[in-house]
Amino acid sequence: MLQKGDIDTIPTRGALASPSATGNALAETIGLMGAAMDFERGSEIFAEDDPAEYIYMVVSGCVRSSKLMSDGRRQIDAFYLPGDLFGLDAEEAHSFSAESIGRSRVVVVKRSALLARAMHDQEVMQQLWTQTAAYLQRAQSQMLLLGRKNCQERVATFLLDMSARLRSAGTIELPMSRQDIADYLGLTIETVSRTFTQLERDGVISMPVSRRIVLRDRPVLDELNDCWVA
Amino acid sequence: MLQKGDIDTIPTRGALASPSATGNALAETIGLMGAAMDFERGSEIFAEDDPAEYIYMVVSGCVRSSKLMSDGRRQIDAFYLPGDLFGLDAEEAHSFSAESIGRSRVVVVKRSALLARAMHDQEVMQQLWTQTAAYLQRAQSQMLLLGRKNCQERVATFLLDMSARLRSAGTIELPMSRQDIADYLGLTIETVSRTFTQLERDGVISMPVSRRIVLRDRPVLDELNDCWVA
DNA sequence: CGATTAATTGACAAAACTCAATACGAGTGG
DNA sequence: CCACTCGTATTGAGTTTTGTCAATTAATCG
Image 1 (cartoon, each protein chain N blue to C red):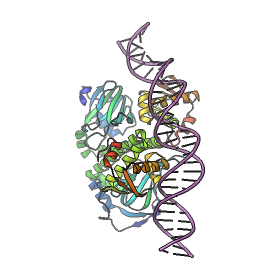
Image 2 (image 1 turned 60 degrees about the vertical axis):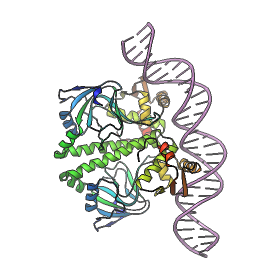
Image 3 (image 1 turned 120 degrees about the vertical axis):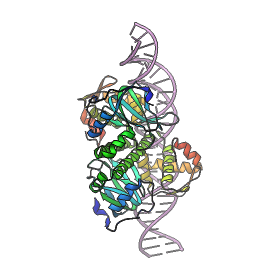
């Protein structure tokens, strides 16, 4: 599915917009080995069941990965922000699809090349594991959210997580639509919208515009979030 | 948390009750390096936030891993069956707890020892990654289930998954309680019970006793399950 | 066999969903 | 600069699904 973006053959040393807390050796290696590609708003980076030929790192923008059911129901597993790796399947085929939200730039490296590298660079191999384990941990938190939290708690957890990952000081600029948030939180767009409105009425957040969220009362959000550690 | 079981210092070569499809080199290594421990019904193997000192492999019985909220709501991330590894956190502390369902035997190996081994056995390191990625993939399917499936679909998916993992020819002997199933599927015990009853009335399954489920109409279960591949 | 835990069932309540209408906001062209 | 348009977001009314609480019934273990 690499046809959709333009390959930028210029090496991407230092191309990372925000040097996220990603496993450094691995991110470094990918940055050096990979090619930068640009994706348009909404374009598909890979599809479910596509051969897992590449491993990806977000440079700028935001990527969503999701699974679809045959009747169109969608669950977004994760949003990837600058510095995040994705496509880390160990299987031959991807078990989910990935699309660019808005415009984004992504560094792409051949799985086979990275694995070859990992085979004689122990640290790269280990970080491949560490990164994957970190995503597994996130997935476990998300299962708690999806299985057991109510809509206020889901939204609070989401906002605190985005705030931490975007390193925002109280104001979050959301890169994704309400529909994406709904599909990530296992809710409908209407419920997400109503929950935002309710939190604003209660003075917990404010929304100058719908994609800009100001966290006004963190203690309440933390309370709703229960077991989160920022 | 290792006090609860009895350490069996006899090496566990060939101790695996059912030689599951686990990454072989890794399972082999753990079997050879590890010590067998027995756990009583309901006993805790490790708790959330415990230091992640060991990595585990189920020999017999069944283990559940879960997360708790402060008010007692529980989400079970996974059930581990013979041959399955667990405790594969890359972090220093476990992000979930693990308890034995019924009696079980587990092989335990020091994380540090296994990592040391992995550092000069490339295959072990890679399988550590592969295993973790496989669990991440399972987690992604579970997120789709928890976020988007209705109770019938959840139960159908659960039954097909258990049937495949237990290699059962149509009859499943469930090792876990309805409460455990409910906490795994993000439902209440009553909803799980009613759904089983409904499926039995519809002739899709039968339940000679509550823990023994006979799959009578796989096509219907597959239909409910949507996108599963056995 | 009896005690105790696990599972089922029923009646009702609540949370989230659906469908439909309306409002907002970014981008475009007059 | 304003009006128009189109995709996105919000709001309302009513329904559905699942949850809650309480009462039974079934299964398991001494």
